[in-house]
Image (cartoon, rainbow, N blue to C red; front, side):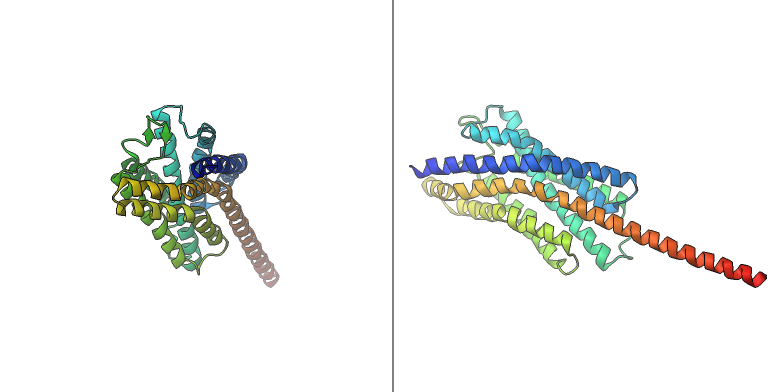
Length: 302
């Protein structure tokens, strides 16, 4: 069996299973979490975390809705029959979701850190209005950033390839290296700095970064740096062949973060219930003190 045929078969079967798993479990999990967030928001709970997690889940939902098209693309032996515009849109959604998820995960971790380390002084920053404005800024910057990297096209009409470039243009290689630096290495450094302050939330975020986003960005960084340093087209083809399977599998693994993101809703609910319980206990204690004072005052008057 030729190596190229093995790679193509493993790529098609492996990514199909990964995308199918992400779609079948991630879609209902994200929809249920969105419904839970809606109910939590109606009750007045959640705060900044609700806004960030809502944006994260909406981003996941966009990607999940594109997975059936990627499955059909793989089953069609990497032939995209839906035209250039659809490829542009679906490829754009993939990159927007990937880096929107990165930023909103960092914002969730940052909000968590501020709530634990600086609970009083951070109140002015940890407001729903600030979180909503931050969400708008994040979406706007990521839309513009991904446009610069994916313009003019991610569709190759001769071979009907979508989001696959062989050989890679210099401009696209630089774009990918920047995404590794800004979309993975810098957020990892930020999360490392906040490691001491956060427990459960940071564990999930760290797992997403290292296990799911990590392999993809490491392979991307190595691949595009190698291509920039390789002069001959023959050597570039050798690099592509040697990394093809690893790149495609790591690329598919990035969709699995949609299975873990609903956990943030669970953490948020636990926090909301804890805060509600604390508020009720406090109110009851104050009520008892007030009742005791009234009784003492009444007895004194008698």
